[in-house]
Structure formats: structure tokens, C-alpha cells
Image (cartoon, rainbow, N blue to C red; front, top):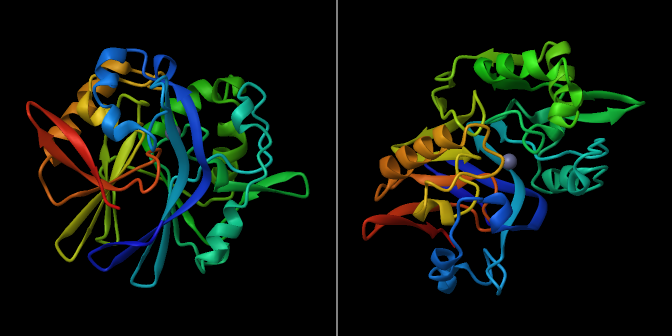
Length: 291
Ligand SMILES: [Zn+2]
């Protein structure tokens, strides 16, 4: 994807997996086939298969560069992770680090790593395997996590490693133990550029991340919305949402708040080109991709 600008900030995307097809009936269990069929014109072929049974998701990281700072938002699955219960994500060997390097970003030069929440596909590249140990991939970075998310995860996931498919142990705790984690309030601000906002529902401490520069505004929306169909139907929570009702309420507020504004939305799993605007469409909304 070509770089985007939000004010003086440059935004690039590092792809880990370009397309994973997932049956709508499985990942959007409340979705209605007849309503999906009426969206065929824009869904096929980019965002769904021709039979409209499967939606497409991507896995990517956003790279923000601004005023000499380099910031990553959500770090995908990572390489070499043991995800025995999750065959798609198990033992990946992708060129994610090479793609980051191709953008001119060396791991030493990353200043902040931000994770919207702690599901395994958002924390994976926080660490890499070195001599049989998980070490921070970005040795000079501060890793920013919402304290609420960490505390909710810690109590459950330290006791049962399988609950996070191992990601808490191999991709979050090593960063905490290295002293590089900042556990922050859910409205934490970074250098006048970025600010968290609580968006609970998908996970207990889920956040979206606002970027403001020179009167321009963008939002890294993480998994608050998984697929562009949910802009039209925010009541369809994903199967990955831990509190589907809260997630639906949060998503609806998000769509209403940012509809017909200049705010650029940067979701975690929309197929390329990923970024876009929310527009009102009759009594609902649609997603207008920035091509
Ligand atoms: Zn995700």
C-alpha cells in the first residue's frame, strides 16, 4: 500500500498475511446471508468470495513516522510462535521484518510499540526467538499497553497459558520482564500525537488510538471493526469479541461518531487498501476506502 499522510505523519502498512478467508457464518455469527447478498456489488471480489460465504481478512501492522519518531501499531502474529490450537497462526515464517526493513525501519530505531489489545494477532512481533528465548524485537522501544487490558489478561492468562494460545507468555510477558512495558491509563497521550481511547467489548481493555497532526485526524481502530460489512451492520459482533453486546454498542458509537467526518479510519484486518472514511448511507453507513 502506498504511504498515507495524516497531517505531518506518514503511515505505512507492513503485511504479515494478505488474505485469510473466513466463513461469515463463523466469524460474524449474527450476520444474515440475504443482507450480505445485497452488498455483493462492492464486496466481491476484494472483501468476499463470489459465493458470499467467506469474508477476507488481512493481518498487518501500521508504521507511523512523525518528527523523527517511529511508532508501530499492532504487531500481528510473529514468527516461530507455538500456536498449537490455531493452525493458521502456528509456526509462521513470514518476511514481516524484511518488509519493515524495506521501509527503512530497523528494529533499533522503533521508539514505541502500541497494541490495541492483547489477542495473539496483535502482539506477536513484540518478541522474536533468539537462542531459544523470547526477547523484545525492538530493543529501544517503549511498549505501550492499556493497564486495564494487562490486568484483565494477567489474572486469567498467567494461570492458563492455553487461554491465549501461549501469546501472553511469549509475546507480552518478556517485554514486561525486560522493563520496556508501559502500562497506561486508557486515555494515555504520547508526545501530543497519539491518544488512547477505551473501546471495551472486543476485549476488556481494548482501545482505539487517535492520531492528530496539523488539524488532521486518524484512528487506528484495531479489532473494534473486523470487516467493512460491520460498518453497515455494527450490531454484528465477531466471534472473537469477548463481550459481543458491549462490542456492538462500542462499534455503533464509533460508526456514528466518525460518520461524515474527515477522520481517516485505519482498521487492523480490512483487506488492502484498509484505510477509509465512514459515510452515512440512508439510515445506515458504508465504508469508503481510500484507494
Ligand atoms: Zn485481530
